[in-house]
Amino acid sequence: MMESHVDTGQLLRYSTSTVGLITSVGPRGTNVMTAEWTYMVARRPPHFAVGCQTTNYSTRLILDRGEFGLTLCDASMASLAEFEGSFSGADVDKLPSAALELRDPVVTGCPTVIGGPLSAECRVVNVVDLPDYALVVGEAVWLTTDEVANKDPLVKHGGMYQLGEEIRSMLISASATACPDGSVRVCAVAQGVDPESETDWTVALRSNAHVLHTTTGGDCLDVVIPPPARHLPGDHLVIARSDCQPAHVALPRLAGEPPDRRGGESHA
Ligand SMILES: Cc1cc2nc3c(=O)[nH]c(=O)nc-3n(C[C@H](O)[C@H](O)[C@H](O)COP(=O)(O)O)c2cc1C
Image (tube, rainbow, N blue to C red; front, side):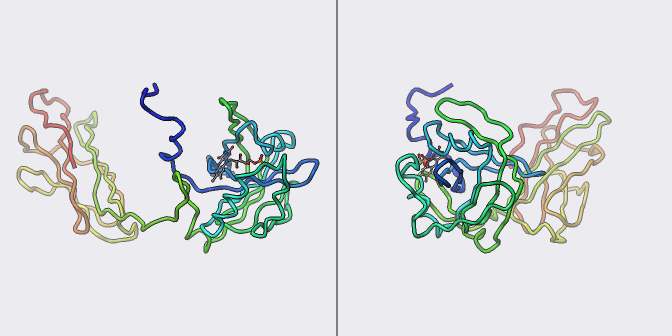
């Protein structure tokens, strides 16, 4: 339910996405509009969803023809994106913009904009009617990517931004789950580590530092360990590796164990 103090006009400042340029074709030729709500929503085959305001000229063209082109922008395309999103193709011809270069269609009848990390030609497979918007889902029938442009995507978050540094928190997040046979499944990820690294993971009891399990390598741990033989009420598991801050998780209540021997809530 909506909180009464939320200004819905400001909600776009709270979402983040790569800006897209959406191409469509009508009786007067190709039109381009900017859509920050352009998302990949399935992988095999790739599908993309675009949130299109129903009053946009592009929306009508896309729905009439059942196809559209999309290009995810890089930072060099910020001015072009601002322009294509500020005027309607119903009133003006937006194509003569100096910064806009179109790629001839390959599979559909829709050109795509040259530049950016990814361009695709899509056939509409579904349309979800929403208040003031149509969420148009298209299957990509042709697609190209550019590794260089992909290093510098155009990010919308209220204003337009470039990406910052990659997050490498070097923190472990983990859980311990009691299995019906009395064993304990320990799941953990080490955010920011090299997945190819050969660093050891250890799972130990906090009360006596007894190591219950060791695994070498990977950025993810998923093991089932026997129930610890001797542990104290409220005991925790310490999941650690030398390159990260460890995680402490409460031992789950083991099969046959009375409720009062259970440890506290898990915490990192
Ligand atoms: C940065 C930016 C992002 C935008 N994102 C969207 C969007 O996700 N969906 C949408 O319907 N309109 C979006 N718009 C507005 C349309 O691009 C704008 O209404 C445009 O004039 C529509 O063009 P058309 O009438 O030629 O289709 C955005 C505009 C800008 C500047």
